[in-house]
Amino acid sequence: MQPLDFELTDAAGDKLASRDTGGYILPAIKRTFDIKSADKSIPGARPNLTVRLDDGTKQTFDVMLAE
Image (cartoon, rainbow, N blue to C red):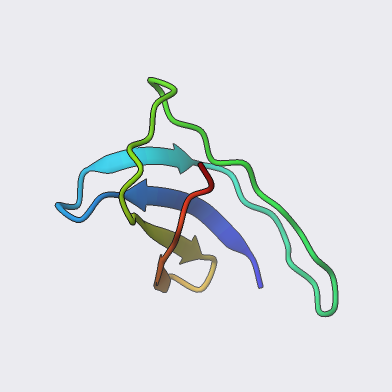
């Protein structure tokens, strides 16, 4: 799998944070990606993470942020 970019959005669809570079994820290998906010503050709501993949598809996940 090759994610190209990541975007964290709130319930209204407003961008909270993003990462515009991805990398490869190989089978049986764990990988982390840091996603940073421009203003350094992300509200404690339950955001969505959208990942755009190299095949043109997007996958969206409900996420919970650590406090």
